[in-house]
Image (cartoon, rainbow, N blue to C red; front, top):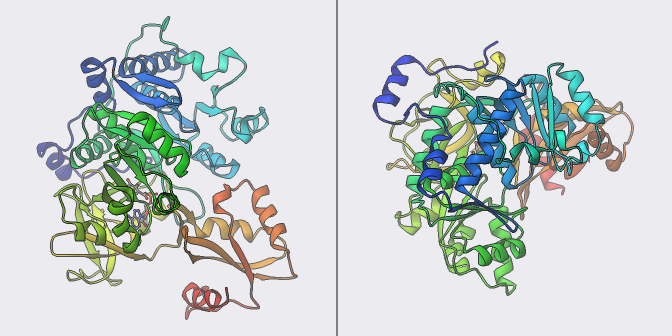
Length: 535
Ligand code: J2J
């Protein structure tokens, strides 16, 4: 089974020759800024202002201590931290040490974490004592059984100084050490896939490809040392990490201001206090911000740019952003697997309101194809296929799924339905993948269905997307049951299996029988039509 599928040699050569891949580790941008502006604030986290010097030093201290403790370059780590400075310090430390992490979302629970540990067999686990699963050591013990090789567990806010992450970050008496050589064409970390299958899939991202997407994004978004970026979405998410996200801001020498959530009162306060110039939001959060201003909250003066991405953004809302929030809008359509599209800052407003942008790079090879694989004409709706300098070539150890997700030429099938105009701008108009996009949080239908089917009374299960005014979509579970089951009992059943809360169906409907397709599969389209009529 393949851990990492490389790009073919001719493309590797092209990407180097064109200057996309510069054979430097993702951390090189931080090193440059730590030299150029050591005292500038890199991260504002509550009342703590962390300078570039401190970010660089603390991450080096952790890296060296981890290597000293016996975790080696090439080993895996599973990390789960909330939105705080330690998330970035830890991430940079692992990248410097050549230890490959997956950064779980903070709202992930036992099911997701078990799956990451099972797949990666990590030597290192880094979590937070504030997370319900790590209040005591029961779950850690369970993870140690799944991955016999776990050698070290560190926690934010651990009462024991030996395993308290903050102690490991202290730069003062940090040991000196030998830095490993980081091969930039190698895997730097694993990004999380929104997924459409039963188990969460991991996306190997290399230094070269990720670093390129960050650098190019920082340029497109015109980031400077004066940029003050609000990170109000979960920090590990590809969008706020790299499009241009926190990494783009660090590359440009700006400041990342951490927020626990996109809640408008909290965010407007932070924006005001720290002179935030730019924020990355999902459509549902923009909806909340617009409502808050309408309800009398003063829109913050310093805000120059709001990015919106992660889910479909209604054109009517897009048109309100500049007027109500008093700033520019940028639409972003991206995916953790690679391809990212932006409307450009100097695009005319019609384009910004009505499209989800165009790819970062002229060598992003985007194809819009019909169901039979034929290229669609401009303006026609088709499925998105892509390959390019920062679009991955295969999920971690998933040979069967990879066969379905890629064609023979290495094009990745994102499952999105798009239209492309003659200038290469894309409009996302739907999807063919079996996924619910709940306000930007992705739910793989199959994952939830297989858990529902474990309930003794459930005979058949289908999770479908139900339109929702606030979130865009919500999950609706349609079930055939042996005997009536109360929805609360089913939710309890799912929670007991350790599923993250955002994946719980918002609505549960029972039917006598499922409509079937010609080949005998559940006909979700028919189901959607009948069920959604009866809400
Ligand atoms: C409609 N659907 C969108 C958009 C993503 C930047 C921005 C977002 C993500 C992300 C990201 C959309 N309109 N503007 O990684 O770097 C849906 C599509 C897509 C899927 C990817 C980034 N922007 N989507 O959302 O991996 O269906 O990445 O395939 O979480 O979100 O989800 P994810």
